[in-house]
Length: 198
Ligand code: NI
View (cartoon, rainbow, N blue to C red):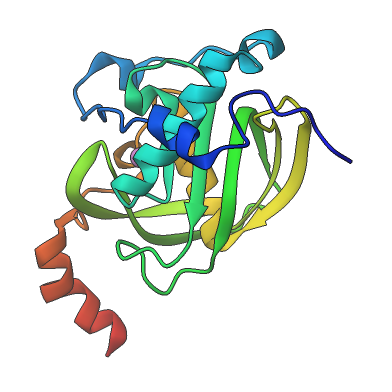
């Protein structure tokens, strides 16, 4: 099945020429605490929104994130991108293909939760241990407006819950059981990870 592409798809040079790295909001900016707006299909399929999604992907890659929500780049819209592939900020994590989630809904498939380290491009240089549901059902639209419906587990489910929280005005700090594991990256490597490995 071929899909009519919406925005300058055929020449990678042209597309690259138009893509830009966006500025990332940091914790404290009010936009991070707002519940984002649903994106109507017509808006999603507009050249402006398609370009914005390309820019989000480019920005996530530039800063070595595994996910990015639109409100992290000052757009209060229900759009998130994620990808895990040989990421130096998250080594040893299983790969997740590039995914665009629009107007996502998530449902936990069991009460089972797991705790692991999380970081956030809007909260630079810090990590903390965050409990997340281990298995979730995800329903969303892709960037073209087609429905997505899948089950995500483990780190994949964690990334989606983190981005979904952003779209609802929450950050990972809100989900920590307490703040005693909050640590800078340098101290994480020095004081926390050796004991986990040993
Ligand atoms: Ni984040």
